[in-house]
Length: 241
Image (cartoon, rainbow, N blue to C red):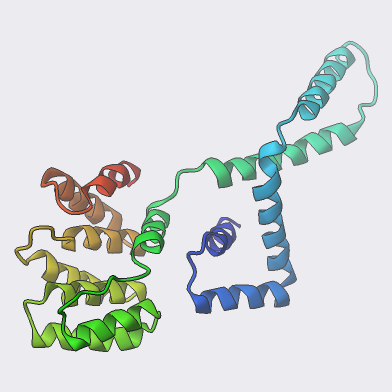
């Protein structure tokens, strides 16, 4: 259930690709059980914060007094209020989980990528391959962008932007091993503001396999200690790993 809610939450948070959105919407039409989960999510998202109103408090107080008084005599207790209260408690627990839980490392990475890495800015004076790669990336034509950035990085091995954008393209394609190699190559370059280490930590957080989070935490600490690119986000993220 938690995985389904994360998947649904990604859709409504605009974290899914266009293809993933189509799969999601088609599943809503063909899978009744999943459609019910989506409806439950929407209902919880829109109405759960209003559940704790005075009426619920009054009903709980009334039930409490009823049960306290009935301890002194044997009588049949109406179970409907108890069932209603139990159902409300389950909904409130699910709502608390959805609204108040801390986002996990993968969610943090996905949110950062969605907010900051969906498009690349044009670089005046750059090579034709780099400019064409940026255009393809912004159109989400990642396979084409990969070829163009790869070509640009091979022709100009010192072109850090080609290497950076190649890594971001591999990250968008979820080719994590290739992205990590790109960002290692980038971080080894002498730059005034080098995002290589930060992007490497971001990639590990998004993949979140094996020792990824442990390694990401070490890299984020290095980013903080050396006041490198991304240190502001690193100070927040490191407390959540």
